[in-house]
Image (cartoon, rainbow, N blue to C red; front, side, top):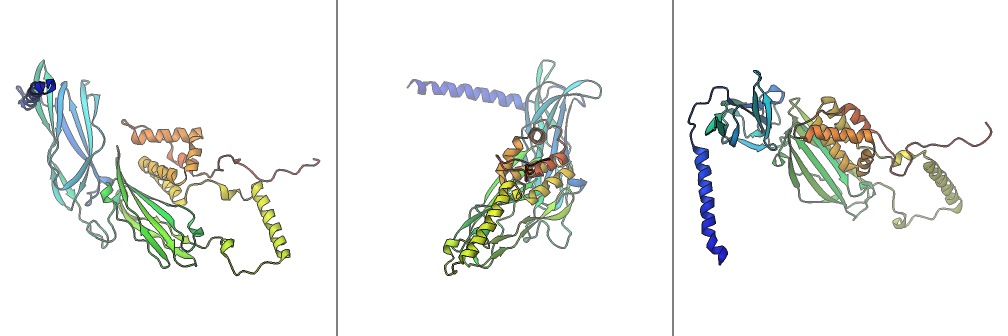
Length: 427
C-alpha cells in the first residue's frame, strides 16, 4: 500500500522533468551564432568515384565542428525514403584544432545507405540540434547540412544487373566462400548421409542482400536442405553479411557421383566489374571400399597376401620416417589462400580479415598454430586494431602476413622438419 501511495508523486516528478527537457530542447536561439562557429557536412563516399547502382552500399560521412561547449545534442536524420540505411557503430567525439589555431569539438558519424532503384535523388539536410553554453546562457541551435544531389545509375550491360531475377544481383566489396563437410564425401556409401555446410560472406552488404540457397542437384543423390541462417556484422568499414547454407546429402547409387561447381556472380564495387565466387566441385563416393562389405570377392592366395603385406609395411615405414608427411600437413584451402593474396595485393584490410576468419573456420587446428607464432599473432592483432578499432590503426604488411598464413605446417606434436636421418657408420 505504501508503494502505491507514492506512485503519483513519482510520476509527477518524472513528467515534470520530461516536460522541462522538452522545453529546453525546443527553445529557439536567443542570439545569432557567429558564422563558422557551428558547421555540419555530409559527404558520400562513392566507390571508385562512380555513381552507384541499386542496392550498392554508399557510406555517408557526417562531420560536425563546433566551437561552443555542447550540453545536449540530437541528430535528426532525413527520411531517406528511397534508401535502406544502417548506422555503423557509435558516434565519435574528439577535440580538433582549426586552421586559425582555435580549439573545437569534432563530431563524426558514419551511415551506410543502399538505394532501392535507379534515379536522380536529393539527400535532404541532416540536422544536429545542439544545446550550447554561450557565455553562461543555454541556447538551442539547429545546425543543418547542405542538401546533396544523389544519382543512382541504371544498369546498361546486356545481362545481370539489379533488376535481373537470374543471376542474383550481389554488389559487394569482396565475397568469400567456405565449403566444409561433416566427413570426406568420397568415403560415403549408398544409404549413408553426409552434411555439407557452405558459408557465404560478403563485405558491404546487409544479410537480406545475400542470395537464396543455391540449387544443388545431380543424378544419383538425395538432398535435404536445412534452414538458412543469416547475420549482419557491423564494422567501421561497413556491414559484413554472412549466410550459411546446409544440405544433408545421401547417395542412392553405388558408383561415383560428381557434384559440379556452383558459380555465384557478384559485382565488385571497387573495380566496378562482374566477378564470380565458386562453391567448389566435389565427388560423392569413389574412396577406398569397406572390405567387410565387399562380398563375392575371392580370397587372395597366401603368396599374394604376403607380398602385399610387405609392400604396405614398406610404405608405412616410409610414412613414419617423414617421406609421406605431406598428407598430414595443415594448410589453408586454395580458395582461401587465393583470397588472402588478392586482399593483400589490393591493400584491403577488411577483406583480408574476412579471409583469415574463413581460414580459422575451415582449419581450426591451423588457426591454433598461428597463435603460437609471435610474428603471426602480432600481425593479426595489428590487423584487428586496423579493422575493428574505434580509432583505426596502421595495418600490418599484408603481403608478408599472407605468405606466413599460407605456409603449410605439421600438426601439433609432429616435427616441422623430417626425412631420413643419415646412416650411422664411419665417416
